[in-house]
Image: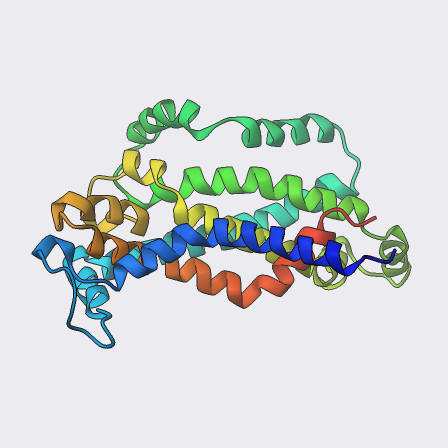
Amino acid sequence: MRVSRGETAVNYVILAAFALFAVWPVLTVVVAALGPDDASGATAGGGVLGLHPENFVTAWDQGHFGSYLRTSVLVSGTVVVVSVVLSLLAGYALGTMRFRGSTAMFYLFLVGIMMPSEAVLVPLYYDLRALHLTDTIWAVLLPQIAQSVAFGTFWMRAWFRSSSRAIVEAARLDGASTWRILWQVLVPLARPAVVTLTVLTFMWTWNEFLVPLVMVVSESLRTAPLGLAFFQGQYTQGFTLLAAGACIVATPVVVLYLFLQRHFIAGMLEGAVRE
């Protein structure tokens, strides 16, 4: 279909407007982070080219973001690895095998997706407290692994059900076992879907706020978003250092997305819905 220049120009204008609308809040935070410290009463001047990159150093030191980021990396990395492996196994079983109770089990995973975490957080807290797991790293890890496995199983089951039966049958004729078909035949083909699942799980886990807020009390177990919330008011009254802290907390997610964006977009477009 041939598109006129006028229609193309209108499309670019609309897309640019939506892009500006999406990026504007981020630019506002970055500009505020590089501005003069409003808590000290400064309004302008100083810094390199009028900018104040030292705000990031001050926020890093005062906010103890080094400790918070280490905890977030530990939690996010563990949740991603465990949940992706379990999702592959569960999705492979539910997507390629027929056994008694498979349908009921799949709907049980769907309940895990549809149930909001706010609805189960209080009884979950008392369950973990009865097991003496509250205020430990397990109280942060286990609920988020369960949430991620529920979605990951649904995601990978959809991909395995749409994968080519001819490839699987050819592998079986060559004598490949069930495990070998999964890890050496299907998983390499599912790389876009797996990368997309990895990025989504990492972003959701990194940004999770409610579970760490309820489950842990110790400062050493605070994740980066939780530490950012305590940073406001406890260490600073101004917006400049808070914006610098927000940039520090968001940087790992942005870097990971930029590094994997090509595979992420490919997985979103074709990984889990390919026929």
